[in-house]
Structures are given as C-alpha cells and as structure tokens.
Image (spheres, helix red, strand yellow):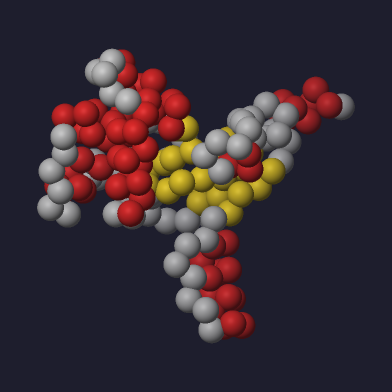
Length: 147
C-alpha cells in the first residue's frame, strides 16, 4: 500500500474540523495502522495511549471519518466472523484478496473497478460512486496444505 501524503488528522483539519484529544488518539492509531483494523482493534490501540477511551468514541470517530470520505468500511468476505474492518481511503483502485483457510488479506492494484464503472454506466446509465472488489481465494500456503 502506498504511503499517504496527508494524515487523517491533517485532512480533518483541512476540512475545518477540530479534534478532541481522545478523537485525535483514535485518528492517529488509524494513521499508523499497517493493515485493516476492526473497531475492537482500534479501541485496543487507542487505549494503549489513553485507557479512558471508550467504544462510543471509537465508533463516533469512525462514523465521522466515513462521512468525510476519509476511510472505507469493509467486510473483507467475513473471513474473521461478521465484523467490519476500516482502512484509510487510498487513491487508485485495489482489490482485497482473502484466504478462507488462514484469513490472510492481500491488496492488489487493479483497473477492474474502473472498467466495471464504465460498463455499468454504459449499460444502465447509473454513475457508480463506489466499487469494491473482494476475492475469496486460497493462498499458496493453504493450497499446499490442502494438497
């Protein structure tokens, strides 16, 4: 995944929003994340910086970031149950490939979403605002152990 030029905190500031200290801690944890985080993961990380942060603060912060178009909420094929995961919205299209054997998630750059958006518009007149591509596939290690 490519590094982001502007942090979530800076992006919110650019949109004219001030952050409380606890909300800033949650946003910083998302900025530092190297993978997809569940709300539970995010709460755990935020509590490392401030043990008084509660679940409601995490969910309100996630809702704010989603409403501002700064993060995406993903179900990632429900590989780890029914929870949702959050990631920083990135430029360019990518697909999530998830292994049902071990739960590993890999991201892959692709032009498939652009092609699909163009096809949807041409055939239906609809103008897609969001396309997600998720593929369930056995990773090489799980293929080897299944053989």
